[in-house]
Length: 390
Image (cartoon, rainbow, N blue to C red):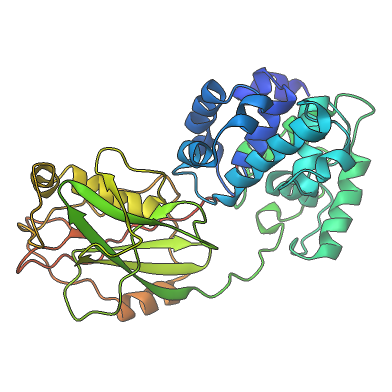
């Protein structure tokens, strides 16, 4: 604990660990890193300062504040949890594990984390960082993705619990795993518990589970523009439910006006956008007043808005012509984290299936494609980061 008091991370939900702030942070940190969450958390707390404020908000407001964090079901679940807290607990986040588990979107981990961080309870909290620390302490090299392994780790973690001070104990283990006892090569020389650690080869603990195969997909979308407006539809789900997206496009032999690649879990999605005319059921939005959109589709709109074409469209309908390529630096990433293919063979296979096209050296790869100009697929990927380091 002396190490944690001097080296622990300063986080806004720790400096003020009110139950609502902790609950929001835990929803945001699911599958997402601390670095990505911090700016969203501060803005969220300014606009939704307490449970009643969030419960009273419109879903589109909630999704707009979540825009860019990905996994939007978390936002809808957090919104539903706030309404359940108002309806069932008089607007106060409950402290019991059973009551927490009954809230929408709250599983065993989130319930335990809220109980520990918000209510200082001594309960085992098993995120990836803590699982790695515990596995190394007891020298358990088995993979941790099975139910039996998780149960074994929970028993081991329970033996480490103090009689009081669950908040600091859990925070210390989490920070130890995020900073010193990290994945790969840990910094054992600085570890405050190295005298008790039984790991013989800590860099190999825990064993990694096999990565799932990457599924390749094509996502064809329509770009319909008229008099400074872009036409969108609201996604019915399951992917991006409730967000506004570019309408689907039929297969076409035309050249796409936009190409990019993003990754969602194990799906590598090649987004291709084609010019189209507005259709019934498509809703018009000004380019400067767009509704909540998923990152890949919003990236198309942001590049269009900053382009000469976007400026011209604000002045009137330009039909279906595109005045040359509008560049997008392929290194520009969405707020989601970059992830390369899992191994060299996978990267080689993807390269062979989707070889980069040759482009003029003065042009960036990726982005809008104009008459007689073809831009290759960008190399950047969109993917949600893992929870570690928290």
